[in-house]
Length: 205
Image 1 (cartoon, rainbow, N blue to C red):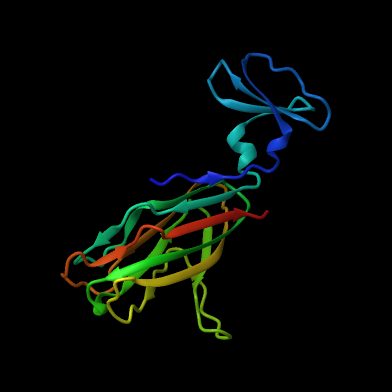
Image 2 (cartoon, rainbow, N blue to C red):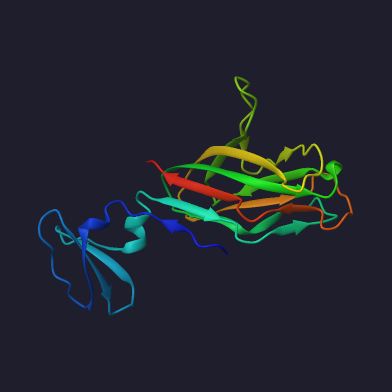
């Protein structure tokens, strides 16, 4: 799986990186980052003495960029399969703005490209494909596949842009791209989602 890049809210407020059992309380308005020797986890303590795992703080407001680093192909199948890399970990609550772009190559225009998403339990991801200027396109729920009508073969492939928002439902988990041919055609390699495709998610609430 490709690595995600998470941007913390204010990295300047983390001042120590120590392996300790009692990190002490930092000055007012500051936070202290340390390794808890009891469980080996990175944690943060603030000036009120509140102690939380680091990943909880990062997920409070974060940006995740998930790139595809290798080509992946599906041939002779219309069964949606989860992408090997384009899987975005989201927390249990909040609202995330999610967008991305796919570079798609097909060996026959009739097969087309079908995609959708799986989401954490209780959460909903509403998205739309890029439409014509001034022409709105229908919103789709993550479990409803969208279809890219690829007009023909091209060495450079075709681009598909999507955008939407995810509302957490109380359970943390992955927002995963799943895709396949829309029309089953046996013409290897079939539909290929190229390296460089990506999904980007930004938590806004």
